[in-house]
Length: 330
Image (cartoon, rainbow, N blue to C red):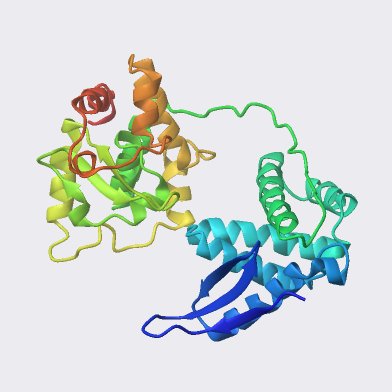
């Protein structure tokens, strides 16, 4: 029987779980003693799986708990962890699993068939991806056999963008809703996501360098977006009106406000994310290369150095100047 133990080193925070593998000592740091004891029990079963049978048989709640802890240790964002655990909660609701040994390919496919009647294919693809990651982790830990699900195919989405006249109507309607106008403007001329807009502060704007620097909520990384010259005076005027307030928006952007805005503009089915698509499409139609637009949308994951963080490439500044802002603003 292979031993596993918990210990607390001097002058170091947290607790450690220790064991031997392939003749070498291994250890894992955990923030609390309870988590360390929990991990110890898991590791003991895993190391001695040949004694207990074909793989370790772990209860479903324990399995979820360890997987959640693993996601946190990997440094994933809260939203990514939430989506992964939400998929497992749906799996638990439909399949009602008890232990890891009872998880099979047939059960996983039964879950997919059941969820296909409840959600869209695009959402189902994300859940299949989350489940595949979970099953891969469980198989690596020898809690389950290899389970692999195929993601369903979905038709190419129809990209909804606005033409110049629709943009003008939307901006005119947004002006009647106060700060909603600034939100719409930032989405159209900077390409920011809704969550990134809501998290902005006054200090994130550098009008001299013509950019805004903020942390992207989707990736958790600090990114830089260039701002068209034409809208800087309007943004400056709005920020000056805030006084000592540091947040860019002191109100909540509720669905009720957005529904009023898009209805007034005669665009009742418009999604806020369609403004970001309009930003990208307008640039491409203006002749900006796909690679530059991809960089502006931050779809790539470049290693942001200090110079990148404080400076915007002149090519990107020239690119955003090609947005038809003069046609959009009265």
